Amino acid sequence: MCLGIPMQVISSDFGFAQCRSNDGQVHDIDVRLVGAVEEGTWVLTFLGAAREILDADTAGRISDALKALDLVMQGDTNIDHLFADLIDPDREDPAAIQQPAE
Image (cartoon, rainbow, N blue to C red):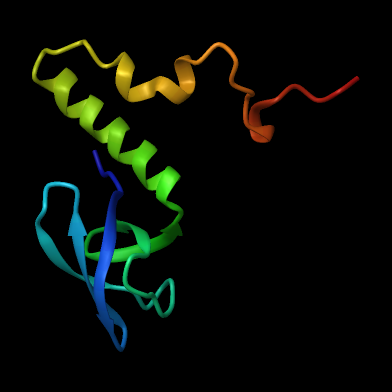
């Protein structure tokens, strides 16, 4: 299984950036696909390259989903707190999955 990992830019130079993952590790990431990035920017990385620029909320939701996957793989099924945005009964579905108005 291949997963994109959100990371936050620490510093950047021509075509590459040092990014920190949620576990605190620092990685050299190719950012040529997304263009110039500034310190603090969140990027979705895959195989050492940034594929997309993320906002902080999206990066957090992806990180929570990855944390839930890790917990489930260890046998822990107490993961509802990591999907609070989906469990909230008052939330509105994203436009992409809403039923079209008739």
